Length: 525
Image (cartoon, rainbow, N blue to C red; front, side):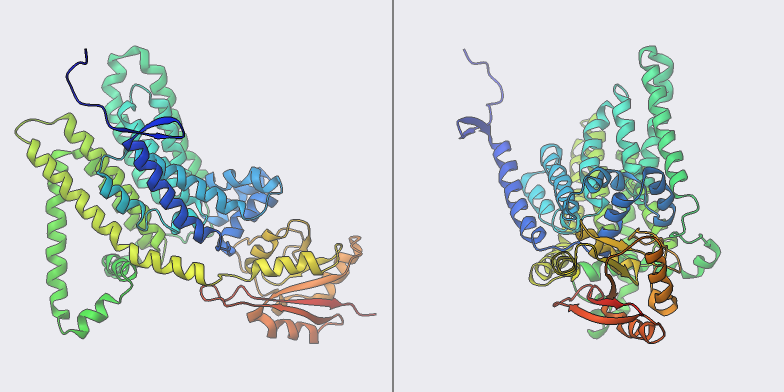
């Protein structure tokens, strides 16, 4: 006899197996997400920023990697993920496959555990949070949704199973400095909660100590990696205070880029620019009121969100000079995590008196988050169409020419580490020589010598150095198209001459610098 209760969810048959409607929903959404992003990924050509990480992973040892991180300003996790694949000789496009795979798992986990309705899940997945920027552009950000959703799943058991929770926070710290505020506040709250538990429950003391060491190690390890970073400017707070208005203009920059219009220009053109200060004051007041209510009903999650937001603002004001859509997307993913934590927090301390208030508050917060997510869609799909229609870089074509047309024993010199990196990344069986560093490393060291070798370099000395080292093959020079004049000037002042072999150009619209000229170095007799 069937017991009374909630009826089981209807099921369907898929290849002879019964699946629930929830599983079918996840499969359909994942299929649509895969099709949209795969169309872009198959067209996408990783460019110099992506190539820099790949070449670091491919050419440097583990010790050299951590020395290089002080010049990159980024923690190690993404490089360590790339390293085994790069050193195994896999093609450069592997970086896109890895990014796509991380995001696929992140979207899958989000669809499984996110406490929002199906319509909200679809809107989030197919907004900028799930399309193009994170799965296709192949950076460390692609790991973030998966880590955040795993963190959300581990949060309820953060004290009974603290080691796994601590490991996730450790990994989040090693993904990007933007998440230090989020991770730091979660660590602090865990520590404050763990103190009374540590006294009462002796069985979990060892796990708590191990978790505390992991969390402390995450902070110290990150500091060690980035201490003295040459890519991060020293923070001069005094000089930034007069320019604090830039902090408040960041949301305007975001809205402007997100909806692909110049907001301020539009408002001024309609002669309602005088209403802007009033609108901003009203908006800030409304946000503050909602956050105070959030703080009263779910203080832990509200404090986590505040810490993450303030840290984001700090990084943008004192470290980064521009607002990137990827940074905005990261903040929105953090906002979603904090809202999910707020829902669970309100449910744990829910009373009949505040039940309706908590539901309304959560719906209000989720609605605002959905609005922000949807604002990213216009710019996202505009960039997606551009990516499919045009090429970003001629680096792949240059690499194909080098591998198919130049002699196998050829040695390719280059005049700019930044623009040579994507070409070298596509080439797996060719020898490159860095006349700037006098080695074969094709990656930027982020200093004054990383580019424009043709302006200050000595072509004859570089040729002599290679011949003395035992190199016998023909020599070629890879030059960025914009530096053609510098290359010709070098040829005029050298005994060795540059003879143009080919030009590799295409309809570049986004990164027009990545077009190339290949010269044959004709040595003096």
